[in-house]
Image (tube, rainbow, N blue to C red; front, side, top):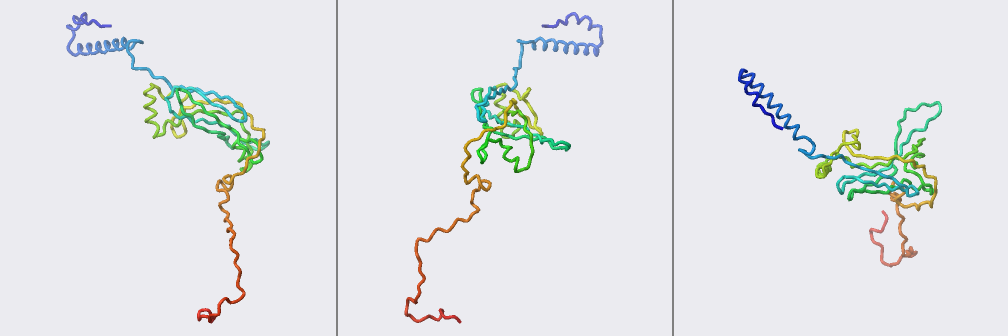
Length: 264
């Protein structure tokens, strides 16, 4: 689209120099706006579109506290995802007693997954075996020792998180990979941590009952004792002497006693 300014010349002859200059400047701006709007129409001129990061997650139970977590994404290959299962815990309410305790949470299992051809997968085992053979979650082991009375939530939240985007040593390489794939760090999966760092996360809540089964009690290993040190604090006993030593009853020589052998 072109602007014809020939009809304007006759009108400009009757204007002074300053007025004519302002009039021409306004016409130039209008022409630039019309030309820009012409070229910016869809299909005419484009700077290249970018898409948001897509991260999908699905959870399936394999029994005995084991869950398979898998998903698809448009992240580049070798991108590392942190997969975790979290259960929220609230202090048990006692009748007639007000408590200001804040709810907490327990990370039941954690694993790192790597993106390959737009797919990733992980397996999380939410149960552990107690000394008596009972299946328990990690927070149940410490509940009695810490004298805590907690009420667990019915749901377990499964999380897939792109390792903190604000991490200095990973950010340049990740940004370059995202630029190559024309991806932007934005959208509904973008979150901000308390320290201001951004991260990509997708989650899914699923009802998971507390374990109630039993199994064979585990064999106690040395590394299970003394905080992983075993019985290193015990002094090992002296090995038995293979020789039999007898104290002589008589003097075995007839040489005269030396001066050093006398008591003074």
